[in-house]
Length: 400
Image (cartoon, rainbow, N blue to C red; front, side, top):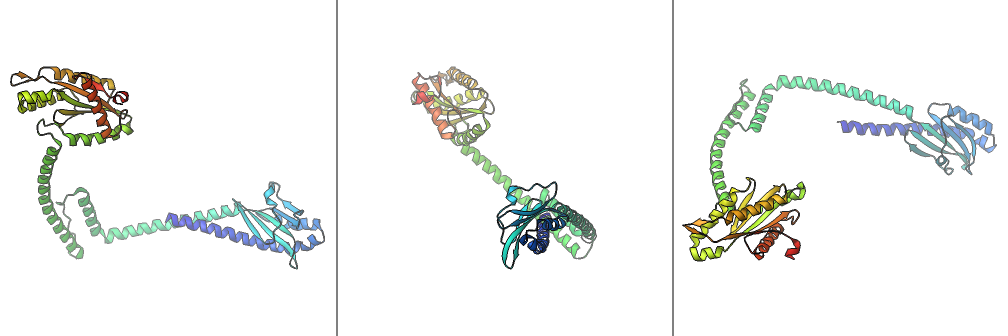
């Protein structure tokens, strides 16, 4: 409604302005007829008097009578008006209008027997007409506001009186939709058609409540089964640690967050040294117990937000989201090496294993999950080449 009123007001202003221009052009046409003899007989004094009579009219700022060569023959101007150079354009052969804000320029040819002898220039001030128009618009706006308010008040009274039962039913429907509480019931106010509708609505709520209860039980069972299945998919069956699927998902989140949150996260690629020797000489059961012990030792010294995963075989990955400094991450890597270096006793036998760790950071080393994993893997192989049982931080020069 406001948009329609605004567009209508703008359109009306253009109509009023054009009507003012048409009236001014009629006056210019009459003035052009009157000054032709003065222009032909070079009577500038009489022409000036004629221009002054028109110039004394309200809103007229400037009138100029020119010859065909553009020379000003006679001119009238308000004291506060200063003509600009672009006002004196080429002598026109037909009437023209130029709008400049709240001013309007009119050009009208002065001709006799079809021959142009010169032209008239008039500048009008539209400020007074604009103020009048704004007052009119304000009065219309106030009138529309009063009419709208009264209409809204009367309509509201009619609605409250005639539609109270339906409004109550609508309110209950909204409450049921918002709270999903299908145990709510509507009050039957009367025994007409609205009363029948209310009873039918209550019966519908009752049936939906029963169906919702049955569906809720079914969903709870399916959710429980789904959570169990999801946990199985994301968990390593031997160590009960998260697996590669869980790591990939968390890596995607961390690399995106580190890219835009101006924070650093760390990924450690962990590989056991001499694990094949343990499997070959002490059996796979001893190897499995060794993997479990390694996972428990590392879990005991990391934060609750850190994610330790078993990738398969004797490979692990440790993700440290949003670390305070790289120095802390590297201190943790050294602690992990020291922890695994303590004797791991399986069935009264010390397992001769060590640990090699590769450390990489995001976003400094890599900004995508796969690149970050490759950087940490390269750093781990650097630890292997450095004599095993240590950690190495990823370096582009070293990996080249």
